[in-house]
Length: 420
Ligand code: ADP
Ligand code: MG
Image 1 (cartoon, helix red, strand yellow):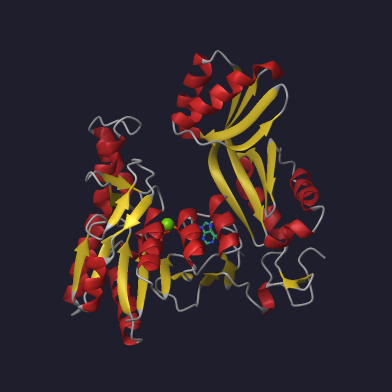
Image 2 (cartoon, protein in one colour):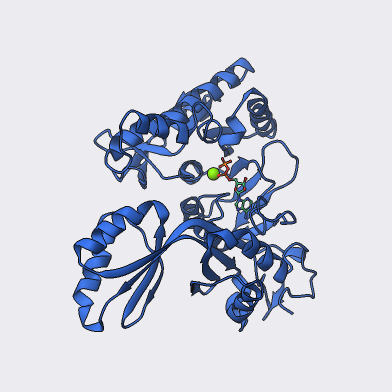
């Protein structure tokens, strides 16, 4: 039995026209001899009747506070994908394809109890395997699972990608196909960069970094799990015929890579960004190591994730998401710390596997942005990523500037390095 998992995002299941395209993709897979398993997100985008954000707003309007009743929030948010799965399954049946809808729990996904951002800790494949053997197309509600105690958990925004990859890995699928509203993973978000280019082939590592740095086309945890289990993932457009982006362990050959030290490496893969950040700066004398630890512990305990951490003897800088500012302030004040917060920041990141072999990338990134008079508030880097914190108002210009600077719109030729 050759299994593939096909995941359809919010826009792909939004209305009857797009659901017809879904039917075509399922048919295509069956005609090629596959047994497809379908995973769906909630229907549409914010403002649409059954979209995740709409359900969340419904809850808030009813007086439910998202920061307190995480359990109740998960109860309502899980409904979006369930509605979508039922509707999709009905559409498949109406088109003569035997199908049934399943919640995450019914599909065998067991989670760890962390409401709103749960991890899948176990998967029982028996039921799905039985449906696959019967040649029924199970449509699984993405983004959710259930604790061993029977509590519903959601997996965090973008979590349907993770559902698809976990099912693919657990069922030994040949491939996981992620259908969305763009033609693949591109050198930058096409909403910001008009000439962003589709990348044919990427490694797990590169996609993981892009996703961590905010490229929301795929969820980072999904890529991590795909890498662990060596599951091939393809990202492509729902209704256009392009081959999309193949994510695997191999670097592509030819146009998209550069020879470097006997290996094919791209220097810069793409630009990712994260809006909605705030920079926190805490003044603290060096002898205050205990309070520093306590601060980081308290922030972690309140589920406030911090990024771009720079520790200096007298000052600790880090970023948090804008929505966590009130909770962070509360903690800093309780600890009697001297601090300042700069709101309306964004992070722009340059990601590239080949970067670690080439000196001076950071200098070039800084020069490109300062030439445009974009203020850099903080920087951070790993071996394949350089990130800069900037004012959010400058984000579109920063993304385009860096995309141009590294000539990402043009596919590099075999003997030319982007960085030459
Ligand atoms: P879905 O609902 O199908 O999961 P998402 O909105 O989560 O879709 O992801 C698709 C969106 O990701 C695109 O519309 C695009 O604006 C955005 N995006 C961000 N970075 C990239 C990138 N590097 N390549 C392609 N799309 C990107
Ligand atoms: Mg998504």
